[in-house]
Image (tube, rainbow, N blue to C red):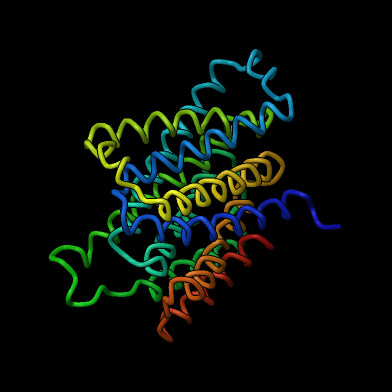
Length: 290
């Protein structure tokens, strides 16, 4: 019988892949920090709606100080990851940014070994090597006509997103071990919401909110709902399954991302990048299975 955490991790991967494509549609017309703030608002409403529907709110009374600290740290790390990720999407294509962002798996496995004593088996070691090789092959250059500095800007933002994503998984595991996962997700989303709107206001991007057209609103809302679905599945899986297995499976979202970006955004992979994608998927499966 397939473990429920495995099914939830796969569901999280699908929704995460869908999120990137929907967000790319909206980011063509909206400043990235404002887009992140609006999407986070959608996720926040969605997450707290689930908490109220499942009557998980009562669990907030028994949260310890330590749990609050790790939930807040996880939220801050997630917010940082989002801000970097959607800034990267604005400067690069989905098929460029996604592989670098998903390399957070490598750092997550290292952190899980250090802090949770999760063993690094031979299968995981092979998987990490495949992930590294696949990421390198999938990094595609921006065309020469790109604005000055844009060729490398997306990579720096994507790398920052990967680092914060790994920290988010680490703190998230520490914060939800004795907590209803839906409530933990809602609390973390609140932290992300404050951070995202703080960045939008701090950079003056909130002034552009009235300029968002109907099409962009639709894609922002759909992207936020997809993110909410991904989070709920991910942190429920993380609560029951090992970090070093759940995170790699969730990162299979890159497969869904590439497929959907090809269908809807007409992004095409070179043979080199396709080979990299195959290595990424193989490395992810090696880590998850062994």
